[in-house]
Image 1 (tube, helix red, strand yellow):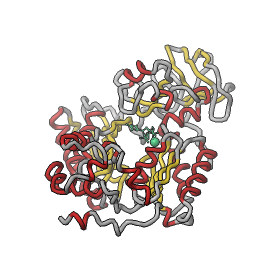
Image 2 (cartoon, helix red, strand yellow; image 1 turned 30 degrees about the vertical axis):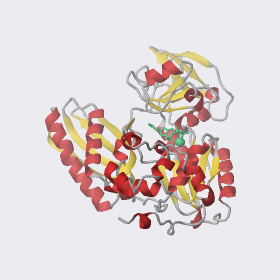
Image 3 (cartoon, helix red, strand yellow; image 1 turned 60 degrees about the vertical axis):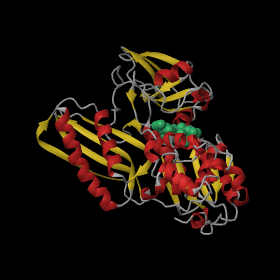
Image 4 (spheres, protein in one colour; image 1 turned 45 degrees about the vertical axis):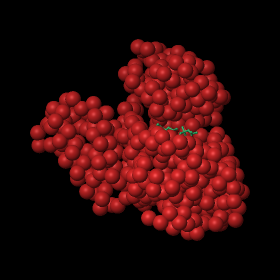
Length: 448
Ligand code: TTP
Ligand code: MG
């Protein structure tokens, strides 16, 4: 490959009109919004069981060192004052829809990347001449509508826009003009570049490459020898700020998958693994027919007693790579803790992306994220609150005392706070569930 041709940036747009928006500490910020007594306090959202993992930490808890993907027990030790909450995916989806709809007023071309993150192509809307004004305005409107802070970065490419929104966090807006791109990119550590995971970063470190400037000094053939042909080419281009990926809204389709009910219940690790493989084959065939890749793989398991469980694995980036998706399907199935007889197995792909083929080939280094399933069959059933179904943070309602949320339940004694998005902060109070039954209820949706 000809390095001069690869370094040719003439196909890139000339104005900084790619916008990247990412909500700050999203799950925790939604919790602080919906639970006024937690505003300004450290909050950890994630698995609340003994082996739980942190989904996200509020900035107050991050100051104490708590981070996404850390074990909840470690995060609690670092931030002992933190409120620890079980995720309420329904609430996060509702806030996400409002954020995405508001971004949609800037341009027809909005590409959601995750629940709280999207690219917007301002060239396709009326604000191409005033990206900073559009960003200031949209941040204010999202703040007004949802109470949430969204950081925005703007650049000539997806690469620069994403790095700029990271650099501006929290509650930031950073526009990187084409003339300032090198000043912005060159000092950044290569680890900050999306797609460069720990293994690639370690390989680069052996070449004494720590910053984007170091990376730019490496000849193409050294890079391809170090990390392989296609990754090397990608690194060579990214080091020069060359990233021609278009903002590409994903299609209508939300998921593809397959499921199978067995004539006879199956059990045993080997049989179940073989069944996961067969169902995954079918799901992969449908994904290939649909085109593109997926970021989330959901395994659905129905046991002989008809209880149904779903578990999902979300990868750091969308992929169309069958081996990666298959590994994620097995991981999700294992996370469902299959031990009993199984009646039905399903595997489906979500967070579909038309452009997974453009993701960087070294993406597989990032650890996948395992979440309790946000979709159907989740662990939350609405009905009367008991010690068994109680999870800290869930919404409850009392006939006369109104709406609030669960702090904890011991036996028939429930500690709750009666507050919601537009009430003053409430003190916690203890109720006897026999005298004062509480209903678990779905979250209130924020309105447009
Ligand atoms: P992020 O945007 O990566 O993180 P964040 O919004 O919490 O914080 P910030 O952007 O300010 O750095 O992820 C969005 C949400 O996705 C996050 O609030 C929780 C969820 N998530 C997980 O469940 N597990 C994870 O490992 C990560 C990184 C995020
Ligand atoms: Mg975020």
